[in-house]
Length: 148
Image 1 (spheres, rainbow, N blue to C red):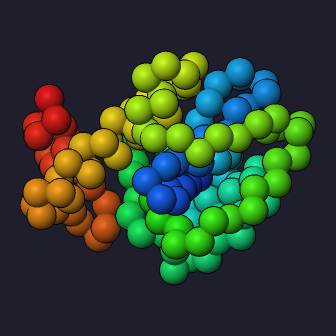
Image 2 (cartoon, rainbow, N blue to C red):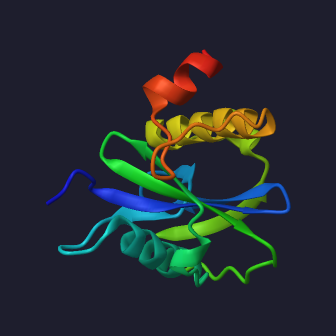
């Protein structure tokens, strides 16, 4: 197995993020899950979004990637409202909320870390000072110092 174990997507539409509620952990988070043998991180992310929300995405929609420990999440910005269909088993509800929703919601360390990186990325983007390698920010070198 490679460096990553899990992958998923941070999906934005009209300034709000798609959050899903995971039944097993009682956490709010982004659609994500474990990688299967031989699966790339992008394939895993697309599969997990489809399984957990019913939303079909393409590789072309994966704009940027955010790495945290053994997880990779891709950022997706949608231009039309998707139809979300949760299975009620693994995911029992969903919400479109601003990123700040996580300040008050129960969420995993991974979700909190990715939300923090995304907030910092948006600050960088608004300053037109993007520095990244192969579309992937390095937290320690690029984002951490600017958001500390």
